[in-house]
Length: 328
Image (cartoon, rainbow, N blue to C red; front, side):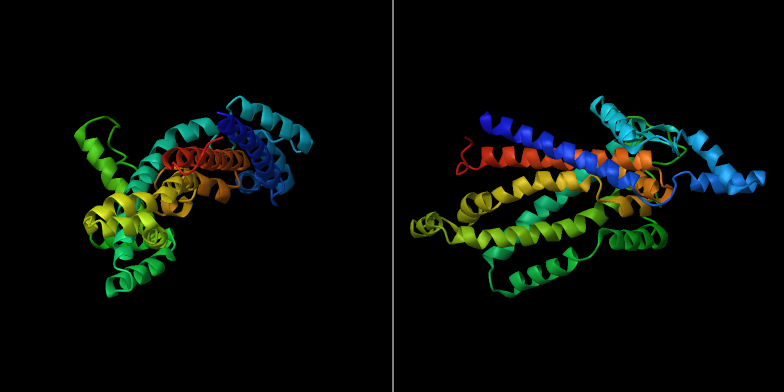
């Protein structure tokens, strides 16, 4: 209990530093978030850009004369209350944008991690059992190459081949625009079809990552005394691989699994943008392109919170599943 309390205090401290850093970093970015709107107003009304900027600032609720520290205090006050920002472009709270986009991201991330973790663990364990053989070298070599391929490159290829050439997956979106969200089988199947592209683009590199991680952990486990003792006792190779090697080699990966989930919340910006998939990453990319500082700050803060919480959970989970780790 003391361990968990200490980690919670540390988590809150890290969260405060991270959130403060995000606020000052984004607010010190060059450019004016109202400039794009000002240009549009200037062209439509045929007026001076400076006058258009004043109008744009009023429309977007930006007070250029307010000190940065005052804005920081207001931001922290709102953040503590659960209000993570306001989007000047979409003219709504970031909470509302998160409420409608987070479920789509969680769907893709959860399925991608589940598929990639299961396949990667089995491939890595199988490769380690065949150490030095052609199959081991082939799996390690292919995984090393695939791991280096950015997910957005795969997303472009999948979109081109699957949606344009073969037409087996939709071009984009989370479901057809003419379909009302419901719990009907047709809607569920449509949602799955639209999620296939992002899921495959994210899963393939992750499979390679988990394969190499499992491959790296397994040889060390195979050199342990209890493995040799099991071999001397005549325990079947399949039993040794399943109960002794795989179960112990997978322990560090379970902790990494929670951390990977946190990072993937906002790590798929380009993938979701390419598939026009309305998740957190899609709106994060929009916020950067549109210089929507309120939306950018809110989503960035959400991602950081997700990563910090995931790291905390990983430490707790690892201490519970590994008997060699003593929680004091």
